[in-house]
Image (cartoon, rainbow, N blue to C red; front, side, top):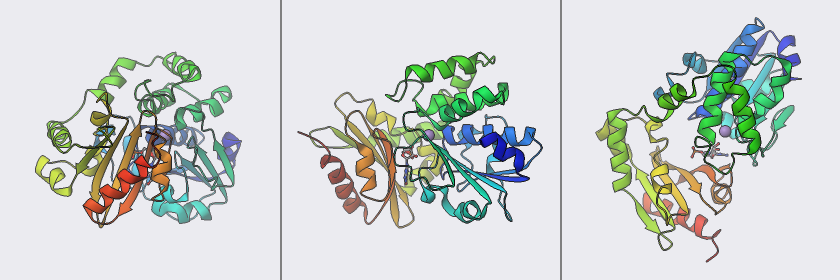
Length: 311
Ligand code: 5GP
Ligand code: MN
């Protein structure tokens, strides 16, 4: 149906979520490339500045075009709900046909056609399953899909990694991918500035609930003093998760009049905690934005987690 919809359209808009991650960029560029191959006029927009650590991805700059006018077809990738589509929701709603491709359990089926598979590791895995048989996946797509598969599974370490994920990875590598090169770009590519920010993040750690919760805080001043930007906060939360006694790690980042909270968990359902603040995500990786003063935000966020913990 997706390929049919692309064939019938002249202008296509692909939308990813704000602070686009590897899954969103990988899935979006795959759809973008297929649209291009079919000779379509296509924009791919994300409501955020370009995260420079993904600039190695071929055609990366395509992610950040500005939409205009009315589209025949709009496709949202990796967006759990209309809020995650961000400021481009108007273009999405106005398009003649709308498609939502995603893997979030909290997805609220906001499009006319919804392809939502919560058991899939990533939106890239969903996309692979939807398109592989059509023959539309080529070596370029395989590269982008692998970026999404690898990043959303924590390089095949998270619990969302299934036997099927490895089947998909096997078929993708069969296109001739140099997986070690992709991995070097993804995981051995920090700037020295980011490395300073990692040190800040580790120094900022606070512990709650007998050390089961680790809270990392990044203020604007930390970013400025380390020479970093907001997208450099990606992955800082993992340093909390690396501590054996920690079940839940939270990374709180200062925004205008609010804090963005990222959650990761080994057992507790953190999607439930994020939902308290109007956010969402997955059981073991979720996020939200919390308004208020720093210490109040910390108290509320910690409570949202301990409420879901059994002692
Ligand atoms: P991250 O912490 O990497 O920003 O996000 C982790 C997970 O939570 C991702 O699956 C992401 O889609 C989801 N997520 C992050 N922030 C939000 C948010 O504000 N709202 C919703 N619904 N999901 C979010
Ligand atoms: Mn995803």
